[in-house]
Length: 446
Ligand code: GDP
Image 1 (cartoon, rainbow, N blue to C red):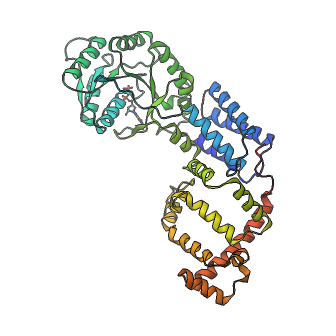
Image 2 (tube, helix red, strand yellow; image 1 turned 90 degrees about the vertical axis):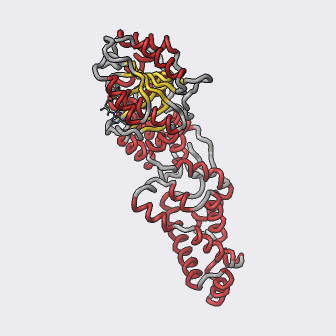
Image 3 (cartoon, rainbow, N blue to C red; image 1 turned 120 degrees about the vertical axis):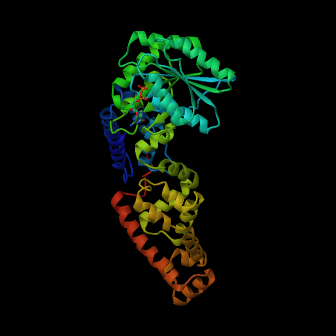
């Protein structure tokens, strides 16, 4: 799910990388590409319009920041807007002051309600609750039985109307189920209601009657993320017909575009509480807008890294370093300062682990090799040098190299290695700075 959107968005943002300054035309072009990416992913048009307009406006007025270049600022803005569309803060389940807490499920037939009832019960149980499933789908043959099977799998009790009592009244079953929970010490009740194939007034009224009768603490609208644009229309119909307090996205493991599901929060104004991404009981989790946004942007925890960088580097220091890189005057002293700023952000393996692609097999192996002790060694060597030597490592002769090595507890080979690599890096940075126009005026976002 969201693969295409993810690819397009991260591709668009990657195009900005290396640009020292973003012109108005750059921002317009980026906004256009974001718009196409969202529309292609099936995000509802009004949501797309709002998203693009806000992103564009914020990118144009972006504050000059010491730690972030303009491209990183745009990434940050897009991420924040995405988190906003997805609901902002994680919305937790609301519990009743007096047990049992009643959660009613509503949604189309096939949306995954019954499966979800089992997952939710299983999850609540793992959190120390005692949930009871109540089978109020008396419409579909076999629905009660299906819920009982799901309940057994989750290891929870199901309350169902006695067989042979005709069709039965779902409102009555719901009431009795809650009464049963109260008298037998279940602290949570999950009411599964009849689904419908399409929006059907009669069934909508039934769900609304159940809601009226049992006054649930939460009414969760369950929506299959694979149904495309219909998700938005269905959500609107349930909002008007039954009303709900939260949304559950199911089938996020499917390969559809999924953008419609991303629109449900903004279109209905109700938060997404849970997401389900598979048929197994464990394929279920609390929905975190921020984590979903960074998953869509395909940037690992790059955004956390950006935030930490904002805290670790001060503007003056970064500008000084950038200017020195551009002029080829970077000294080992500057190198030491930068290294210490990076290390303020945490162990180097963690920092690198936040970069996109860090979860790939190859990268994981490489990260396992990264060792803070290596950096400790580099710092010790630089500290063993005189200020003059740090400013111009060319003056460090053979006997000084031996002294530095002995003083910092490393071999002469280690010192030689550092000095040689520093010269190479400085040369490369100078070339790159020339290529990207790095240094001087690169901090302006307009
Ligand atoms: P209900 O009619 O709303 O109760 O829907 P069901 O719970 O019976 O689910 C309909 C179908 O979707 C079943 O085959 C489920 O196994 C499947 N299903 C439910 N949730 C998920 C999910 O998150 N991922 C996948 N791939 N299938 C799911």
